[in-house]
Amino acid sequence: MASIAEELSRLPFFARVPRQELDRAADRFRALSLEAGEVLWWQGAPVDEMAIVLLGELVAEAGGKEVGRVRAPDIIGEVGAFVAGSTRVATLRAVRSTQVLALAVADLRALRWQRGRLYDTLLELAQKAMVRRISATSARLANIVAGGAAAPSRKEPGALAKLWRTFRPGGPAGACPAFAPILRAQAGLRDTSEEVQGALAAAFVAEPFEEGQVIVLEGEPASAMYIVAEGEVDVLRNVRGDRAELLVKLGPGAQFGANSLIEPTPRTASCVAATPGWLLRMDREAFNGLTGEARMLWRESVLTTLASQVKNANAALERALAPGPAPSSTVLPASPPSPNRPRRDGAGFAELLKASGYLETMPASEADLEETSFVVDEDHKRNLKNKNLTRGS
Image (cartoon, rainbow, N blue to C red; front, side, top):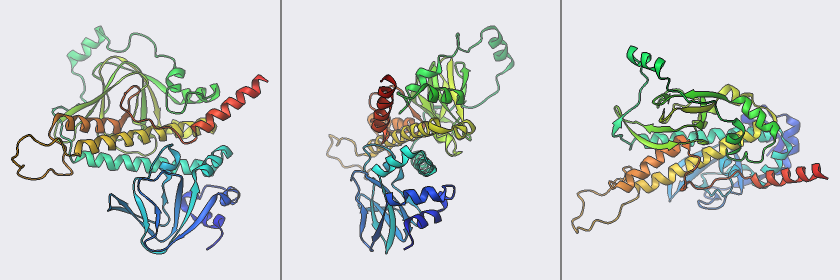
């Protein structure tokens, strides 16, 4: 086997990382050789490292069933390594003789504080992996969700509607609220500096909306994310025909469409204004244009948000598909429940709607959202505290 630095330099996703940086980071990676049948990670175990497959193949097993294969040169476990409290979603077992490079979470933290291109690349890879998870869950939902209300669509207003709006504008009554408090409420941004807040605020554009306005439409190409600054937005999903269901109502501080900053995926739901208000909009160009600490912190924030969305969407989906309470009658059903069909009781349908809602958005104040925090949050807070103490001395 070549040196670890040499192996890292051959990987296509590290092509833009300077060789000197890879040389310095090589000691943080651990080379592992697995024989056929040997386990790298067990399902349910805490995530303490990520890995890169250099040679061979691994099979992923969940609940005793094969769910996928990983081959060189793939990176694995990258999402869990970034998110505190993650557990392995599958067991990874070598199919044949396999070589991997493992990077511990503690070493990932160390790379973060070096502010190099390597950490930035690992963060980008984790974001792309998260978008793939969103797409997979969305496809699964598309097979089982059917709406019961008319789906929203983009239609040009008629002459009467245009005339009515000239006499009774439907937009917000006042100016857009200040950006800073809204941005500080996003994941991992509470204690950021004024410089970072200013850079992030400059990347957003304030947009007014009026009641009934279609902000994004399910299935349309996506290139921007939004944060609700004022007012309310309804999130709806329609899968078959022209029917839709209300998934969740978003208020100030809630965001939607963050995955569109990473990959040009279609919208997974429609968002329609329930009241007049204001949105903060960031497009992919502004997202990619961020630099320095603002770039890193916002990318971490987006990853944390997406991880929480997928985690909660999948949990709600599993609850929707779980067998319902046993019927009081002793008569057996004509056929057993399908593992790909939701329970027919009201609770099962409600969980299905929650799953769809979580997939598109992160409500700012929903009691049943599981907490997800970035793996280096505590390091960031401690470092910030030390900086403040130094300034005060």
